[in-house]
Length: 407
Ligand SMILES: [Zn+2]
Image (cartoon, rainbow, N blue to C red; front, top):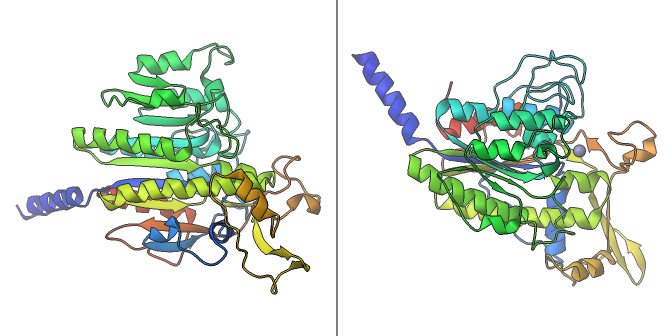
């Protein structure tokens, strides 16, 4: 009898403590990005949306046996809770990139369907790219994106949004399968254009892919056709909120700001700055939602890339570091002209990995991933981070705890 009471209390407390969890992945964003961001908004220190989080830790980012991770091993650590080799997604460390399969690890969306939580994934990269693939796929090579697409079709993730139509199109696929049709047959609403985001039908799951490959940088985006990342997050939150309330469930939502990494690889400073500003818009939307609901938000980078740094100021005297004064100019996102005039007067530099002459992920890249610890933010009305420095494998247990079920 006592045991039954104990189990009843355990189940009741798990239900009472259930929360939605939103996990924002800032792909390749190093800590300095936030410092640069703050200096661009105003000449002097100013508060941003990032200060609305309630706790903060540094997160280490190593892969299994390497100092510097790629996004596949990082996604496996974040979404499956175990370190693996670079290039491998959703398999343990007995796998070898392109060579050998390992043991499949349970990922976060499989966990959600096993325990009755709704799930959603949103990214501005191809949906089959390494980071989003880590939420649903098991494969020894991150490059096999046409096969990763087949694995996505087999899942029952409730909401899927990103780029990368090509991998699902019968005109391009090696097997000529029309994966959009297959998703439609599986009761998914299909969206391929921004105007398809006007309606919400929670009776169906949602599959929206915008653009053939990665979605455009926010700097270059035709916002009449492609939604901004924050607009996708708005849609995802409305959809999951309605569906969760109707079905009496909690949801897990992963949102990846995935193009920060790409801009850093190519040292594209203006594109990088726009991606971080759009991240702040996204964080505002997500925290507004979390504050008024039972929702925990975690925001973490999978690794740092190119580590841009605020170096100094240019004025009539030339370039100076410690003698450079606060600038009067401000940048108003998304005004490209105000960014141009500001960047005439300040110096921000990426780390140039190509000058060391070693092998980079892609020879045309100038910057590569670094071994830096990255920022991890938490918004929770109840919890704090357990340690000052955490591991990338510590994120998944936090997500599971906040969703309200522990193994
Ligand atoms: Zn990268």
